[in-house]
Length: 170
Image 1 (cartoon, rainbow, N blue to C red):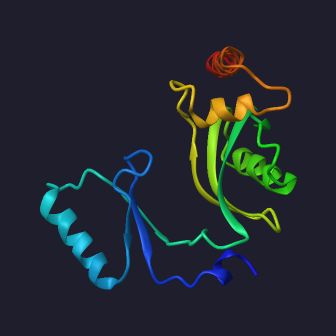
Image 2: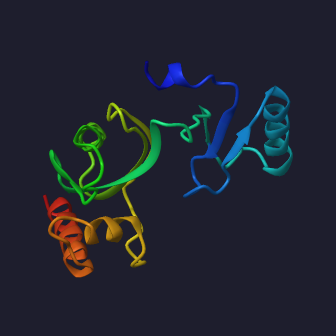
């Protein structure tokens, strides 16, 4: 069964498109909460409303075989590679690359997804095409350190910059 078969959708997750990370994300448990959320938006934002919103079914990844995972993708258009993630199923990594290709990703990006550890199936949470490169603890740097062979921060930044310059002057 697919992901939709394993989760009975009774709640929604809403996220303002213009916000990053999990700012503004709320889980709406029922119609009453959805109506209250809509009324709050109408009351506290002057028209035209400055945000667009994404509403999605809540997905409970706390049960096996699902887990939340991030993939750092790096490369030119059509030649993306997953950086690090040696413990993740090869099928999931290939699917992460396929998502990046389908979205036309190039350079350095981080894909957040739920992964079925039995099948490698992915449910995409988001693709961040401007990942955090300011903190040594960021996802991209952590994946680079765990690559085989490891990639140091300077090399990762140099590769990302080189890809950006090639794209800019293409």
